[in-house]
Length: 118
Image (cartoon, rainbow, N blue to C red; front, top):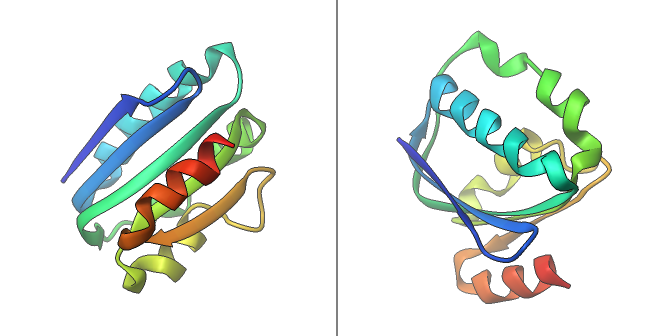
């Protein structure tokens, strides 16, 4: 499993997630994201590439990062195989957070980028 973060614009970052997401890799990503939020709100383009889901763990119920940083994220665009749509939206707390979260099928990745940077 890998998570790679790359800056797209001043406040928008691309996050590529591949394989099976482990709790430890996710925690590393959260620490990196916290550093990006120091200067203000950010947007995230999450690209699921060859994504295989989440590693089984009871720790996924920990919502402390969400509670602490909900206001620090402006928009989240998720791009991936439509079979992951519902789980990815649930995982990102779509509809329960201040940031707007949208899922885009892989063929609409450019639309996701445009929406995110508007």
